[in-house]
Length: 152
Image 1 (cartoon, helix red, strand yellow):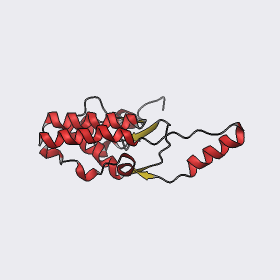
Image 2 (image 1 turned 60 degrees about the vertical axis):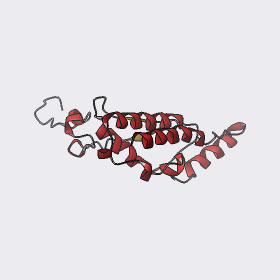
Image 3 (image 1 turned 90 degrees about the horizontal axis):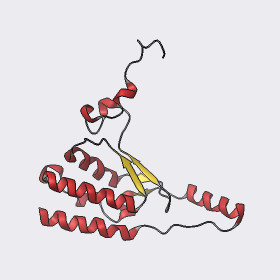
């Protein structure tokens, strides 16, 4: 499996070459307005199409060692950064929980603007349905019952 993981990491590294060129507006307010409208009206794109890597190429979590999971997680996140895509996740989340959450994003669509900072939200803001489990949920404190708090 390590040989396949190594090839997949190379593919993820090579996908950085697929970053679309940033378009710049012309001179003046009207050109800027046209440019912004074109970006806003551009269609969403499936992330696997944007990256040139399908989610089907990723092995199931249970087939990977802890080290392989960490290697793939890092390679995915590095590739996303090349596309100016960032994501937040709990610092203490185990690699075997982060990996499927990252891979699941490849089948989703995004309104991608080349050259702009984009974000992928892994949290659904429902602690009971946290993809990382309630023990790793970083938003659970925000949604606790405040009915006994005299300041709420």
